[in-house]
Amino acid sequence: MNEEKKYEMKPLEEMNVIDNFLFTQMMSDKECGAVVCSLILSRVLKREVSRISFTPQKTIQGLSEKTHGIRLDAYVTERTGESEYDINVYDVEPDKRSVHKSGLPRRSRYYGDLIDVKILDTGTDYSRLPDLVTIFILSYDPFGEKAMYYEAGTTLITHPDVHYDDGIRRIYLYTEGELPDGAGDADRKLRNLLRYINNSTKENAIDDDTRMLDSIVRRVKAKKEVGVEYMKSWEIEQEIREDAQKEERENTERERARAEREKNRADAAEDRAEKEKARADAAEIRVKELEAMLEINNQQ
Image 1 (cartoon, rainbow, N blue to C red):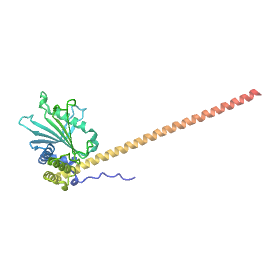
Image 2: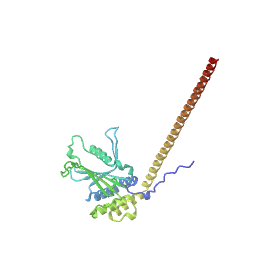
Image 3: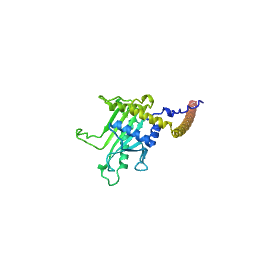
Image 4: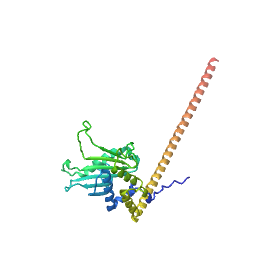
């Protein structure tokens, strides 16, 4: 029997910002995370975003035990004034798994709904809901138009010229997408940043933003505790993978045994049917013989 191929571990040095583990480790460092979030938001929104606080891997439970909860990769709030309600909320989600592609719009919808529910206190007026921007950074093209930047929002379909603002923006960034027509310096900076996030090599650190991000990436990768955590996470994933393979083998074996039992039962039923047919044929022949003998006797 051929030995199963072991899952090959990607070296920590080769990990990119878009990889879940590295992004999480960067966000877990308060200083690094603040710089990275500010940099990403500033480039995406084309304005300086600095008065922020953030929570990495923020978990929001569903409304009941039966409903689906979510985990946000980076939950960021920006202070826009002095009131507690003067904030903007951002959800930054790097994603390299193209299997999520078809469900992205509804995933964004669900994330936004749960975030709103957790923000708005009982008795608070709906006008106090902050602006919410979800930003997906994707290694795959979400809508097949080869664009770097896609944005979705709510409009008044019957009267598209009428301003309709529910405070929600959904931005989808394709790391290998093309620049828009008439792209300016801000668009090129965003493209450089996205390329580095997707492929975090020194060669892709080609401007001030990406060089700063590259220094953070190298700093995080060099931490001993990050290396230890990566080994632990890989070992856990490997165990889960091996357990899944074992379960799959057991399920396959059970299915094979079940199919074999079904085949044996079918063969036995067919054998019984053949024997019954043989007895019926023999009985029919015997009846014909007796009828022939009776006819001969009658003729005599």
